[in-house]
Length: 216
Image 1 (spheres, rainbow, N blue to C red):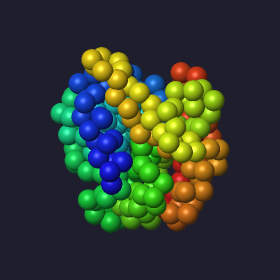
Image 2 (cartoon, one colour):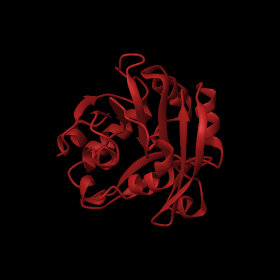
Image 3 (tube, rainbow, N blue to C red):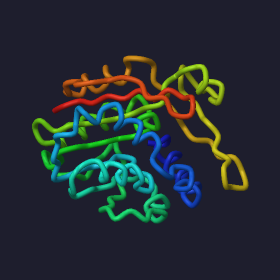
């Protein structure tokens, strides 16, 4: 849990400038270009975003899907306070979801799972599986463990370490990452009980993002 506390404190610190760096939801839009045809017919009543940041990704999703109840689960209170999105907020960790079992039609998690230590990722994915209704979809992206990202990483293990954030603040602050190798995300999602519908790679800013679309 110490790692999660680090992540929370990091995003509390950068919350006042973070939304400026994610304007337009570039990754979310690139992801929808890849998987939009897979989910286009979905008419979800309830949508949950785990690690919702300031709500930008849900804003992109709302423009793509029909009107639903959009819920953002975010560990950092600072990020929630920085949001201007018209969504419902829950201050929570993705590893312990306070969501009624079987209540969600769609769960997304964009650039969040790679902040969760390997020892806790099973908790997070099983929680998502429990929150979804039968047949519900889970869509996630993670940063890939490639040369471009490793050049920025201060390692503490294999594909694990810290990447410094310095934009808009007076000092660099280290963000914890557990980067993913090809096929690792699909394996973890399958191990949690999901059926993988589709997976692949999205490149944004020269960096690899692995994605998976899965069904309960």
